Amino acid sequence: MYKILKQGSCRAFGKTIDKRALNKFYEIPAYCIYLEINNRKILIDTGYSNSFYESTKNFPERFMRYVTPVEKNILSLEETFRLNDLKLDESVNILISHFHPDHIGSLKELSNNKIFASERELSLYKKLSSVKKVKNAFLEELLPKSFEFISLESTLKSEEFNEYFEEVYDIFGDKSIYAFSLFGHSPYQFGFYVPEYNFFYVADAIYSEKNLFLDDKLSKTLKMISWDKVEAEKTFQNMKKFVEDFKDVKIIVTHEVFEGE
Image (cartoon, rainbow, N blue to C red):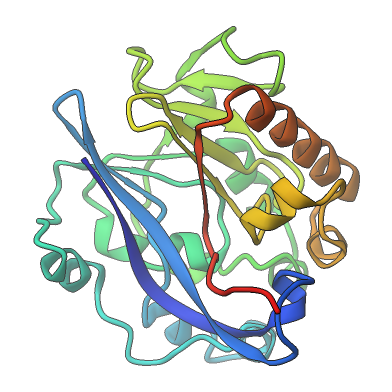
């Protein structure tokens, strides 16, 4: 089984997410995914938390509050689990797609869990100046103080799906969950493909599923704010090839919310 969980939200102008949206502001949920497979419990990304406001008290971090107006009084991840009849404990494995606030916002609640993330991305972000960290949406204060993790790049590299993605990792070595390189939006973002449930979580490689299926190119807004515009467009085209061959796969994005005009 798997469940898509809403963990906080922010507000954004619709056209910045999808050109088919109405000319108004929308509440943009941050989604994460809980699943159980091969006797493992897994959470993909962690959504927002009230830690966002604790980590943006001072400048330059405070600037993030204006760029991304995040809702206040967000339920803890544990409460979200409980409301969905799930139990959050140390047996839940955590997969992080990339290190932006809406994906690591609740990570402080999970410092005792087994966490998988890109070592290259975290290392790169930590070397940036405080201003560049904020410019690239990295709030280091969201990380637990005793943050230890398993590098996604150290898991089993796979030759499957290499015709679509430059790097593919069979995370647990049993073909239950693959990490696909979706570089561009962030330096080393990964998406996660789960064959048994036939879903592909693409995080923020796109902001709207419509962009992938109805457009020839990555949305201008997303391309503009990407870490690497060339890589972001390349990832978009790779994803299009993948869904052309895997027509029944369910695409799950982090912020899908509204209908167009």
